[in-house]
Length: 108
Length: 153
Image (cartoon, rainbow over all chains, first blue to last red; front, side, top):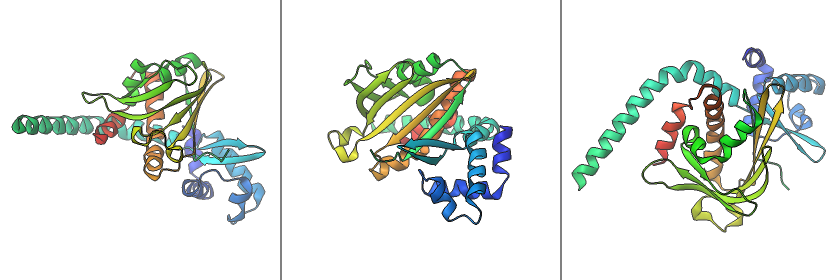
């Protein structure tokens, strides 16, 4: 989790994740073309994102394609938000099920 | 073959075999995915993704294209209404590898041309994989996933 926070702390890396959110499966070349920094700097940022598991890679022939991998962010959310949400979500779904059951009973 | 639309990776503190079983054993998928994955898992066989609940709707179906337990599973993937429509049939590859003490699961979704399925899939996979990780590491899936499955109905 430390790695995820460190990776997200940098605005250039967040910008790279935004680019991958908009279009998955980009090469280093494509990502570097519209970033205001050298190709080497982009490669370094991508390596940090990959090590934090925020970027998944897929080899398509000889091309290394990069994808946004939001799974570790979901883990952060479930750690602190999920616990609070659980009770609320459960009470809401219980409420919904109750109403639907009532409706069915009325309908028959 | 065209480049995949989505590639998701999750690291799970569990042996490769447990992660594999959690993908193909319907009793396990029910507990974190809100669906039972049903198939005999033989090459060419049908698989179905059956919603947990009284309706038992089949939300996704497909064929087993390739299977190599406990490491690699390739399936086709479509809404039952789109069965036989090649343009609306996508492909999901699961790869489970041991990395140190953990298992790495990579889910690759390709040929996703149908816009509704594409949107649903992009929201669904991260939640499913977080829920799987939570289930195997703590014994409990995520409540947020149950909520999403209920929204389907």
